[in-house]
Image (tube, rainbow, N blue to C red):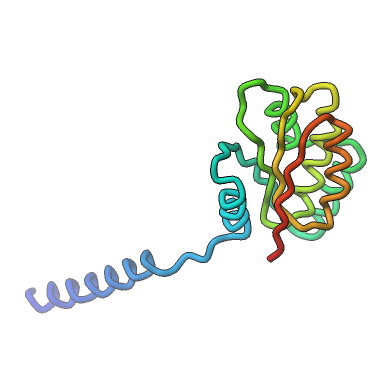
Length: 153
């Protein structure tokens, strides 16, 4: 009986060491986590709410972006519109793992917030510079200030 207990204890100890070593392994930050860090570095005194709009796969992203550009809304776009219309909400930051869905979502939200956004509201976007000109134009039409943080991975 003691031999079995020792073997079992040894196996249990080995499993515990392997399991705990996995917990201490390095965690590589996701693209969205890197973008939040870039946002905090650029605006250290800002308090903001992050609306995360992640890419999924090429087909789903193409359908989502097409629908948003055609006038359909999404839960994230509606959330952004709601936050921009509130007088007491902090800055709204839009980002994601990848930029296509995030940029299309923000574009839809800005178009939908025309006449609803509180004057002087600011929205922050972290992403590729290819989206800057279009988003700046839509933000200007909506009466919203857009702070763009260029990020490429």
